[in-house]
Length: 501
Image (tube, rainbow, N blue to C red; front, side, top):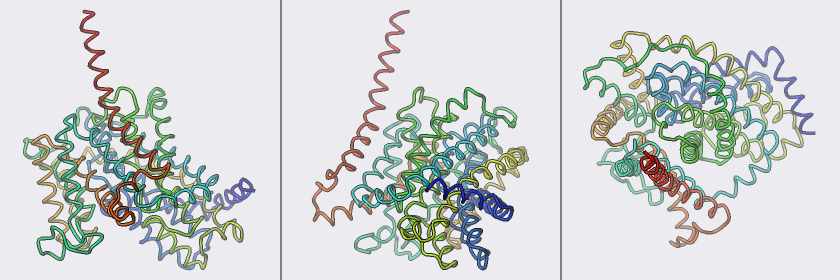
């Protein structure tokens, strides 16, 4: 029955007008995702009014296609100019930008595109097969589970700290401190706002990201007397080799599973999915010393995971009628405009709607590859612009992106301040990526730790109750212990080799 409904949905998806709508959605999503400050939800919101009066089977797929395209689009500036177009692409900067510095920016974009396709393809298959069971499982996650999930994400600190674990830990703690600025989530008391109402809601993510990643890099280049981004070789259009495909495709497939799972958890999102995928890939892969220095696995894991989130996020929306993110909330608005209420009854009363949407999501993955291949060449060519103009353009996009996040000049000032802080941290050997990671996960960890403690009247036993909690704790312990054991084994191996000579 499910297969028949899905095949029927594919028939609708391949109609000329639907294909045109999907292509338009993916194209706008890629463009929106590539512009810092315009993430997937904003791109969908801008598209939403255009769907008014459109056919149901055309409007919803177009909105979903925007979601798909935006997750890939964010990786383009992340790789080429170290400015993530979306917060979910922040993890891609670590290895993607390093590949670009080495003259392999074109290859990094190919890896990002095909990894995103793999993750999206896997996630749609899981969506079709397990929409209702997975959504039910996702509802089992309460405050304690989300807190442990955030702590598991923080185990990536060792992966992004540049080899100095102590400075990486300090950097992450600084990020956690930044996340506490604003109103207390439980009591509503202002914290560290310095009496400014502009800080009541805390720091917006966009100024933090563009400041620590992009502006700090520009300031570093200027300080060291180089008015351009150092590219070791002329950037060329490269296709991954067979060996490289074999290296990153299995990782992309597994990260697609992880991204689907995280996407199905209300409130988790693509940013957390990408960092978790990067962390776990680095923890359990061999030869991890190249991570952070241009390893294609470091591009494949986060890109596959964050591209798997859109289909995963549809699981609670379609099966339960619960939007788990800003983007799915906009998609819910699209349902409401058409007079349709998503939820369990939709699969029995109007099954053609959810399965057609799933089929269109599948088609959108292929359309994304086609459009992405067209855009890669001009995207790479842009980096051949004179370094002075390139760096000016980067700063312009940083400030425009920061302004668009809150429509305030204050956000532009924050981006500059965080850029200066990131520059100083870089010069002193601290890790700006670890700070961003701490900031991203700070709210998730703090809010849910405190909610869990409120539910348990202050007892910490709630974090050790249930199978899910125990599994998450074991994964956290493994993530912390594994690097230490691996380092010791490596020392023993080097010592034995030295003794042999």
